[in-house]
Image 1 (spheres, rainbow, N blue to C red):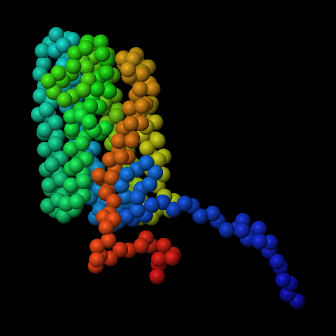
Image 2 (image 1 turned 45 degrees about the vertical axis):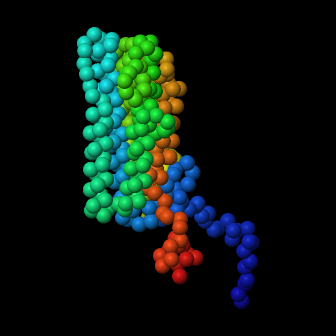
Length: 283
């Protein structure tokens, strides 16, 4: 004799594994506080990676220009040993390097003209004199904020900031600018990994916010070392340095749209649009 065994519905419900939230897929917005979209294919991802690295290298080069300028001005104004440094020529060289790279990836077909145009417009904002939140010249004033000397770092130019009053304050500004540069580079890597795993529909999805949080925590540890040495001016205390770090993450999140641009939202006759591969669209 066969016995019919009834299983309570609650037991059946509990036996079904929970489905994790699916992350953004090819062509979809990254979401959250990140601009831009997941690349639709491998070629777009490679293009975005190249653009991201090139912009990161530009930021690094310009930061070095600013550090050398601050060191030269301190030597002249405070230390009494006249030194000169052509910061504008240094920035021009950095921009020319980026333009050559963009031209190369355009000629070899790695990036489309539209992708390079969006990235170029973003770079124009990074190198602008004022009025744009991404301006590196304006940001320079946050690193060299000691007002004691009252002497501008770039009195006849467009770089913000004042000449530090002591060698210790100069060292703090120089080091912090390098720490912020490392943070921005780490966030660019977080975005590149999010693009790669989003294209691959990774399960579970990549924790991009967690990646950024680790990068910011690394900066906080490094800045804590600066503060502990007692070499920073009051305008660069622990809270101020953390704020600069958070702002750097935001800049990279906002600028991600120029690195991993979203697809053209306009429907063009004759263009095939493919849905994300799911169980529903599999057929």
